[in-house]
Image (cartoon, rainbow, N blue to C red; front, side):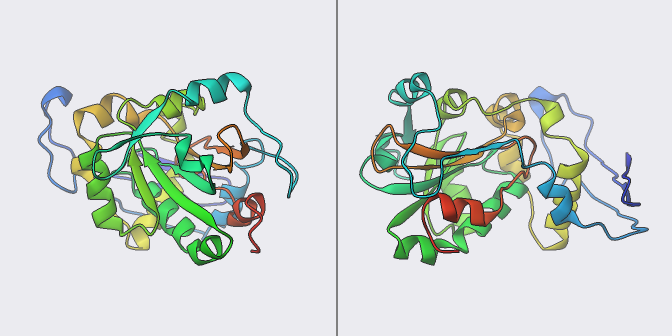
Length: 255
């Protein structure tokens, strides 16, 4: 498959995968290989920025004005996530008594979600100084969450949402067209060049393939107070990370 963009970049992606029915997949750890021919180095940051403008909603800095509907708040009241010990926690308890940055991964094997984890964790000292917690939630099992935590050494808290209810409540977008985009393709290539890798075993587990693989995530800033969600970014495509300054400003952290 070849992707050509107006920037003058041509990307050739070759994929080799065993011809096994999808319901009985037995893949090697790295079934995908990428080969790239560049005629011009693109400004990937600029490409990413062009996808952000309409996916972020937030209140003015320093205010506590909720940015999600009362119906969404009511649905979230019934959503339960699970910590790495398998203990169920009402999701709103994660920010009931504190301010928190909550990141939602596309799934626990996703290479771009590992970049999201790192770019947020790089600012954790500032969040800690301001009393802001850092949390990551992924759609999948507790076992998947543990593997993600072990692989990434994520500095914040990690929770699993096996039933995807928080993603549905927050109306994060879903679909193959939000996953395979030119922008996402560029970010994946850049991630591999920087040494990041997809966990294909996690990626091809049945529940991830049938549900989590196509649903995007997002980031919210919430609390203190169960009904107090003051910032929400909904990914429009895979790897659609907002500027870190937006998140720090939303939780009143000096960037």
